[in-house]
Length: 392
Ligand code: DP6
Image (cartoon, rainbow, N blue to C red; front, side, top):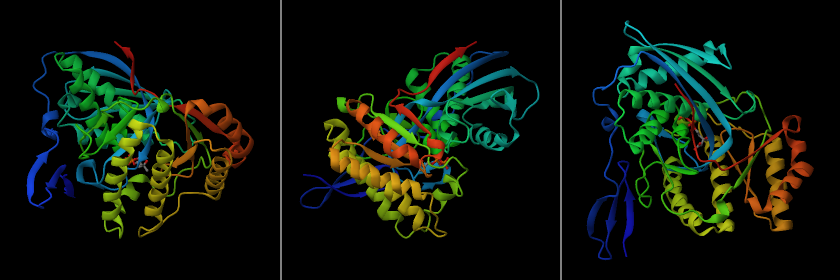
């Protein structure tokens, strides 16, 4: 029997044998480094064109909260990819002579200056991996399928959709690129825009961050959950209860930062590794009682980290707690395996298998909608990732 005694940040595990001698320092994955995403010289020249991709939002089951330099997560995370909540982005490009980054940004067809700094920063961060960025003027036109002020973060789907478009252009410049490289690099780029965006590229269940039991997992990009997922999770439902549609008081980026010097940080990061191990087994064997325990505990732990950082803050609202208590009572009374998770906000994601959808939707309508802003909620379910819409 091997026992894991330590998990270090470079995704290596030190195993000890029963005589507690270190017997191997195993790299569980042939480590891909960031330099592997610097492209070889482009083979083609293209004057202009346009792509359009959609990319979905995702909801984490084991949460990413805390990061190191260069958008490296402090712990691994896993998410369900959504189906309906997505960003649709088109990228038009025209070759230019001048050097430097140049782009226009439109939201729903109209110029949107306040989105520009985030994209400018993203282009600067990704320039060494996408040298063609200097050669074109870009027009980026983006829209979301979910309401603008719904409290649903569009940074994951938005950055993923932009990364897919940029990879389409790179593939046109270097057509020999493999599909594996295409998706891996798209996720790598999306991560540099927003960490959770790297989980919105491909796959229904996506792991991001090195984990000793998940083959191929990496801090640099998300991967599709590598083993067979139990059929109970097919078309799993996520109904998003819109408790508070306003702007969050504390951004995720600030929240991540507060995990530096957080009194519980190291224990939390270790717990995320443990929960991902447990969830891996659960996703394979379909034990929903165990699923519920991990998922709800992760949601509350995320918010507990916020409440115990300095400065501390609370993103849940009174109605968030009303909903949680109603879900617990309903589950207890009916034995229907419905649970909740939260992201960095007050909205509640209600998760349940498709075979109880009728009962749960009635419960939501009868008992939970009253706690939502204007009674609004969004019915979503598992989806497969980003999709190419137009290739010109
Ligand atoms: C609570 O990906 O939005 O949703 O990397 O700073 O852009 P940045 O943060 P972001 O953080 C998401 C945090 C979370 C948990 C999760 O999605 O895993």
